[in-house]
Image (cartoon, rainbow, N blue to C red; front, top):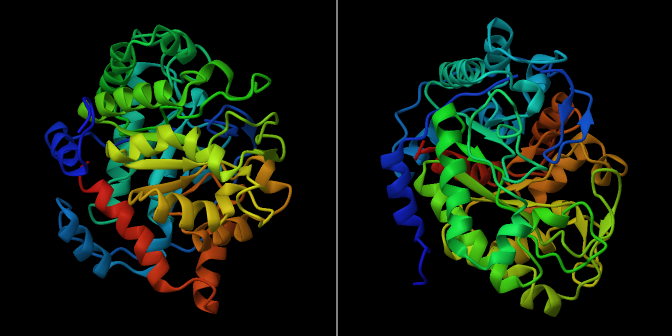
Length: 408
């Protein structure tokens, strides 16, 4: 086993000792994980009935919990949303009665925080703690994922870029990659993991595992560690394992690789013309290495791969790229989460319900920020009722979510 690479069992052991705390926040316009503002939506669904669940401590406990849950509870666990989407308000900076009622109605699996949700250390800690408490009360003890985009560097660092926080800051990841020194990437993971865990987050949508193969690419650019897939893989593994040791779950992104595209999937279709051989020898290497190191989450991007999957679909909705390639061929058994479903690459072609159902059909597990949360949630329930999605398919993803939460 290479230096800095941990087995899944070892990582779970580390996290079990670390005991990541549970909590989150809420404010105004919703945003996708790369920072584009989009309108929030109101979830007006019927309350999900609460069942009594045993304490989560291992995979067998997760299976027991799954057996106590209603279909509505299971589906709710597959959504990762903003505080604004839950409460229907413009800007959430505290979690009070509105958040408590929202989570009682729709106890989602995860809440993601953006810059508008962050004012002061005390405010953020209290908000996260309250969200965590309300979520556990709504689900009889199931913790909530509390996520943020904290890549390090000046572009995508929600906490470090706030003047109210005195935390470690870093240059672009490209600058760190240029040094060739993996201990610097290790420091990024350790420092970011430390301050996020201390604040109350338990998931970081980082590191960026994209290899910058297209010099015209601006959406990734200096967020990538570089152009050499082996160097990028070394850096990603170092950051991932250090963050895990600090008690925060990293999510590598954006599978199958956003570094070759010359378009921005925030606003429309992004296409990679790479062949399967190209991807195998380059873009997949950081993901393959991160999977071997035990990364618990992989984010799939809205990237078309016409020379690999002839389905005219972004990877985030493709059975070929999710179920066949990432799950079976690369052997990833953790949580597959979509990139934001508020992004133009999805919303220009699919309704919220259709996108959510297609993602789960393709083998994905957690839907990040659907454009219309209510419609997406109901769409999944309707798909189960009509037989488009099986209950077994829902159980499979929910069990992955519960199993990963067993270390929180």
